[in-house]
Amino acid sequence: MTSQAENIDVLIVGAGISGIGAAHHLQERCPGKSYAILEAREAIGGTWDLFRYPGIRSDSDMHTLGYRFRPWTAAKSIADGESILDYVRATAREGGIDSKVRFGHRVVSASWSSEEARWTVTAERNDGTQVTFSCGFLMSCSGYYRYDQGYTPEFPGIEDFAGKVIHPQHWPEEPDYAGKRVVVIGSGATAVTLVPAMAEDAAHVTMLQRSPTYILSVPGEDPVAEALRKVLPARAVYPIVRWKNVMLQSITYRLSRSRPNFVRKILRKGVIAALPDGYDVDTHFNPKYKPWDQRLCMVPDGDLFKSISNGSAEIVTDQIETFTPGGIKLQSGKELAADVVVTATGLNLLFLGGMKIEVDGEEIEQSELLAYRGMMLGDVPNLAFTIGYTNASWTLKADLVAEYLCRLLNHMDAQGFDICVPHLGDPSVTPEPLLDFSSGYVVRSVAELPKQGSKEPWKLRQNYAVDLRKLRYAPLEDGAMQFKRKVPAPQRVAA
Image (cartoon, rainbow, N blue to C red; front, side, top):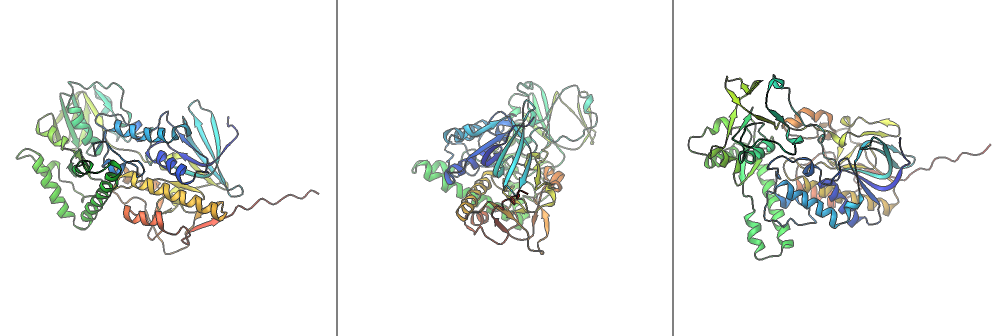
């Protein structure tokens, strides 16, 4: 049963770090606009509320993962998940944003009417009933992966394993691994976080990887931030350290693309220095790909290396032949004994939270569309989405997208427009994959995402400084963005 639609100016989907940030910008820059946030879960926080596995933390520094408008003042630069969740919820609470969140509302579809210049959005509540909303602008801040299902390959013999199998995305409230043998399958950010955290209580932890990942030890606390805090107020320190880290990320990424062998040598030296003499670095820490073809894993204060050095954890580079009742048999013939296996094997991507989109009665195949400025879809009116950077902090892009949306809405109000829609008028623009990244979760699903174009403004830039100029200051009327006024339906003349 569907209720009568509630009318709202801007409807935000998702109450995670992006959605709360977008709401703040709307309140500040478009105070006359009404808005609501639809959240499928029962709590604010998104990723940081969903993931509860041991040691969960940011995979980038908090001076760039934090909001531009709300300084991160804690000492930790690489912060634990609970601290990040507190930060997001405090932002919502202090701005009164938490009162705008409709919990337990999973958006299933959105239908655009050009005649009304509005979206009709259908959400399913936890009790199975449906509710509809009508909005002038729809903004998806739901990220790009499935919350209800992580990725687990089909492992031969897994049904024969006598122990417990856990996926990090669905961590049990009371996992029993103290004093037990644990195998963590994977080599990405989740795996390198889990291993040192679980090693504190487990009898032994093995990180089983099919192939190595680039791993860099970074200070848990930013020494520049700590030094500046002694002489400057927090609000002055934050933008300085934020820009320092933005530039450092950018330089590292560009250097990785232009001189990959040089960066590989630097990373290798860091690993060698952090591990005992004679450790087989070339087997376990020598990826086949170039730096930043996949995301670089950061470990605060070298915690992973410390766990390996003290013997509480080890890395095994091999492939699984089959699970056995007592563990995992590898293709090399070795068998890893295990009581608990954690499948840190990745995510499943899901664009726009899986909602179906219709424009004037026609269902849209999102994978066939081009993304405009990495935040809107070609020929889809009044809809924006947030996808963060793959080579830097998610929130850097989320802030810019929200600022651009507010600028767009204010421009439309000032000029009397009801509709904005990006349209590709340049036949020389060719489609390219949206994410130029070789991580498994991207490779598996990139064909299901929209495409980017070969030229501006359809090109998705993984560069904060460039996006800052384009999204914050570039003209809104750029030839690709079309603005229109609602055309009233013709009046029927009585016979």
